[in-house]
Amino acid sequence: MSMDLSNKISQYARYILRNAYLLIREMITNIPRSLISGFGIIFLISFLVLSISLRESVKDYLENRIFGKLSINQIKITPVNKTKYISFNLLSGSKNEISRSKIKDISRIKEIENIEKVIRLNFPASLRGGMFGRYMRTDIFISGVDRTFFRGTKIRWKDFVDSEPLPIVIPNFAMDLYNNFAVASGLPQLGERALKRFSVELILGRSSFNRTRKNIFKYNAKLFGLSSKVTTAGVIVPSDFIRKFCIAHKDDPGLQRSPYSCIMIFASVKRIKELPAISKKIKDMGLMVESQMDIASKTDKATSFIDWILALVMITILILTIIAIFNSYLSIIYYRGHSISIQRILGASKLRIVLTVIFEAAIMGAIYGLLGYLLGSVLLDLLSENISQWIPILKGFDLKLGIENLLVLSVTVSMLVSSLSALIPAIFAANSNLFRAIK
Image (cartoon, rainbow, N blue to C red):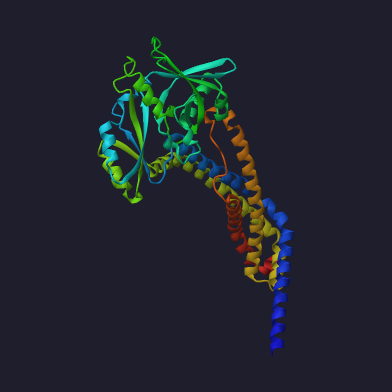
């Protein structure tokens, strides 16, 4: 009895292997013809790669260079702008500040464990930089932070102290503002490498609004790095430098009543669940509070329009691709009608016919998915290398593959689109009239 069972198993195994062989041979024969039907999938997948990467790059650009990025347990506190109009005097920033009394009230909140202040020097200032005997000068904000402010970032925070030459950090936001202005004015655009070669001089006491001052204070400076943590239109220096300068020149007529003011506070919350209650408490003080959740919400709102446009284009390409594959497979099924009918007469089931067509479509989709991913990657590299030349104001916009395993996603989507597009023609083929087909 055991011999009979083993014989039946071996016969069944041979049957399965023989059918698998015939199925694979038939698919290999038919795939070259089927490849013509799904050529549009290449463009669908390449656009999928570009759109996902573009969206993630835009989101990253907004968070890191426009809105700033916070830790999950961190909040950013800023004063409320009570003026109805924007002041064009860049050196009148003392009107919007966080008062000392409010700073004390914030520090008394037990749920807050760490406070980092951003102060601004209320004094005319300009920055002069250049190389090889060619220099340019611009009015500038001077903000200051303690060295611990940059802890956990790429900047060497322990070395960010008042020294000679004076270390300055430039926010990415300010760098982008300059490059946008440079494009409009015909000036050269700058990056971190170029700036590190510049000889930089910080000039306190003179600006475009005040050229008649006699007391001018000049300090040699060096670029210490770029930062996305603060989105201000100026340079950041050690706060000790600002405090020492204000003490040394407290009797100078150019200093305002408040020689420096606190314009921003970064506070860390001990427990994340207490963040909403703390935010409400600080808002009741008449201040603005922003967390990473708020930044993410603003970023999502800013990218929603891009999402709609990309989704509309994607749906259009998807519909056209499905229609093209559907029509092509109807033609292929009509061309192969005689062969399919012969298989049915010889005992092939309807399910086998349907699966054969779907497997062919899936293999075709995998091939085109891979090609579409490669084409999308090449176009992405080309766009990343030339976007700053084609659209100069986007200098610093970093295009990269949006998500991990994008290749797997591309191949999977391509196989699904191809298989589903071929499903209805496959059902038609399996249910065709055998006698009419043979006739």
